[in-house]
Image (cartoon, rainbow, N blue to C red; front, side, top):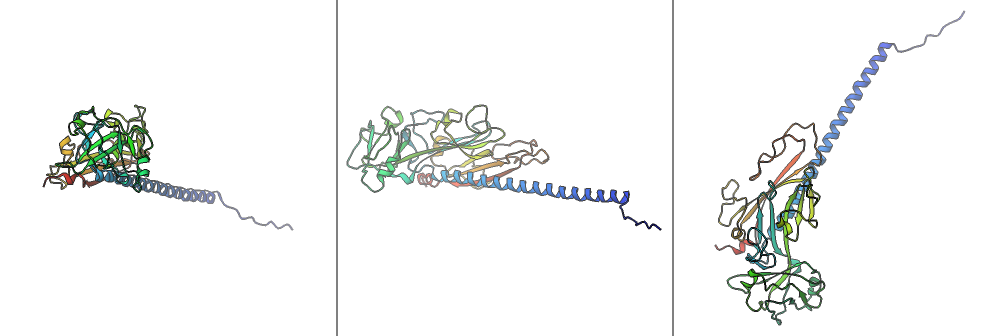
Length: 353
C-alpha cells in the first residue's frame, strides 16, 4: 500500500495578497525616504542660504563701519569724482551710493584707510606738492614691513590732522614696488585740479598714511557681458577693489564673495534724519555732500537656493525691499532675506552738532 505525503503550498490568492502587501510596504518606505530626502535637502539649502547671508552681511557691515576712516570727509588727488563720473575737479567722498545701478539691484562704494598699515611721514622731510616720492622714517618698528607691502597700482592715502578747519586727506597712486628704504614712489598729483585747490607749494610736514581701501559691493547677474562668474541662474555678490566699477560693467579682477545672492538693496539715513524703521527720512541714494555726513545705512540681502524645484508652488521672493518690488512669478527657488543696519562711526566725527 502506497502512502502519499501531503505537500503544503500557497494558494494563488495568498500569493497575490503577499505581493500586494509587499508593494504597499515598499511604496510607503520609498515615500518616507523621498520625503525625508527632500526635507534634508531643504534644510541643507536653508542652512547654506543662512550662512551666505551672514557672511555677506558681516563683510558689508565691516566695510560700512570703516567708511571715511582717514579721509576727513573728502579725499583729493587720484580718482577725484564729480558725482557722475571719474574726474579730478572735486574730491572723492567717503561713500558713493548707486541706486538700481543695473536696473534692479543697488551698489555702494566705501573709501577708507587700512588701519593695520598706518605709518607717519618723516617730519624732517618736507615734500613739494609735485613730489613723486613720499618719505617715511623706515627705521621705526614695523615700518619696513608695512611700506614693503605697497605695490604698483596701489593707492596711498595720507591725511593731515593739523589742517584747519579739519582733517584733509590726499590720494596718490603708487608707481613702484619695494619701499624698504623709506621712500614710496608715487605718481605726480600736481596736475589734478581738486588736489591743487587744497595743496599749496608744499605738503604738510607730518601726515598719517596707509593703503587706501576703495571697496565696491554689487550683484553680478549678467552672463552676457563675459565678465565675472554671475548669471541669472547663479547671481553672485561681487567686490571691486580698484574703482573701475564706475565704468558701469564688472571687471575681470573683481572678487566673487558669495554665490546665489540675487538682490542687494540699500537705504541711508542722513545726519539730521529720524533713523527709525518706517521713518520717511530714509533715502535710496545720497548726494556727494550728504554721503560725507551720513548717519546710518540699512541693507537688505536676498539669498536663494542654487537649484529651482519646479514642484514648489509658493512665491518665496519678498514682495518689496526698499524701492525694489522684486519678482511676483513662481520660479521654484527657495529664498531667505536678511536686513541689517550699520552706523557710520567714522562719518559721525564730521557731524556739526
